[in-house]
Image 1 (cartoon, helix red, strand yellow):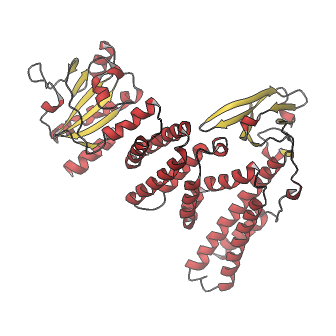
Image 2 (cartoon, rainbow, N blue to C red; image 1 turned 90 degrees about the vertical axis):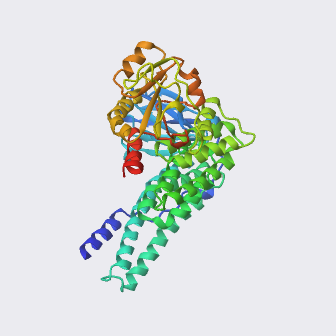
Image 3 (spheres, rainbow, N blue to C red; image 1 turned 180 degrees about the vertical axis):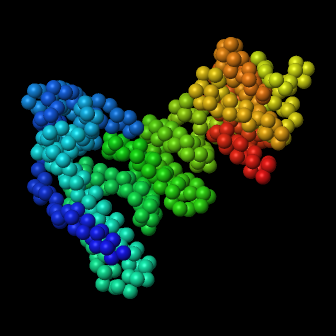
Length: 476
């Protein structure tokens, strides 16, 4: 153990940065807004280089040029690009820059040789570069001290050693203070004074969840304080990461699932409170967050989001998103699903023309899985045959399956369903089908598990989830 501690301390000494002060903060002169990025990248002569910017979840090209034979280049940007951008060349290694209206000068060998890159002009970018170099070292040192603190407090071999424990606490405080002092000295009207602290807590989520759990509540509060209507965030490149990291931290906070959903509801409320004044951002964030929650099977949270947005007075939701969210209001668990009349082209090996049911309510099974899909849907081509494999077991446990096809062509439909042992129905109207509209289907595959009164019991996101439900609730 002593050797381990000595090795850690030696590693800290070798990697720990000297105390640095923020450069030239007292001489914060107004810079001209000429909006140019120039420099020299010796190894990239003759190659193309472009400047990309961020608009929320998307990127766009601001300007591009070809580096001359001597390695020189010059790019431009405008006030509308205010935020964060990145330079990228043929080697696909981006260099992030602050687009705050200052001239920027960059010199180095190539963008992929980060150690050679120097910002020779552009005060905000020099602060950004300085912090980007120093902060990770502070974080590395802090993590090591936290590890040692746990050793000295939890291991009886070291817990009585008061002096080392006090030294560790003092050093932790010094590291945090040094980092905070750097950020506090940044001019309040500079973009980096907002961006660097925001980037700091967004990027710290994994470390906080695994090693600094005492910081989880404060990190969650920082996420809830974010304003997704803020143009600074929209142009920062952190827009997507902030959404994902926020809800990943909630999901991995160590709380019970019920508590996690309560916390997610609070976070959704905080986000929407600020977004409600900006309908474009509201649609963009809601669309992405809804998909994120669905992909993570956090259906209680996605349902809450859907109902919250739909019930907000005065907000306009685009048609596709509205239909997607409306599914949760009209087709949520506990509601009664519409009856389905089996018109059009019907197929089922276990039935003949005389005993084929005329509608969903004619089925006598205790449970029914209604599945919407099509031959042209790649996921359906994988998932629906899996239903066929489980069908015999499900049928033996009183679970029937009804497949509603969105195919438009008879040959495609019949070739797809010909091997399926369950009921298949197609009216060849695709998205205009009354059945599809009655069930508010916006994508394929979509599944609903119903009881014999057509009450919605489950909205499965996979065949495996249905099979698990059968094993757990029926077979046990």
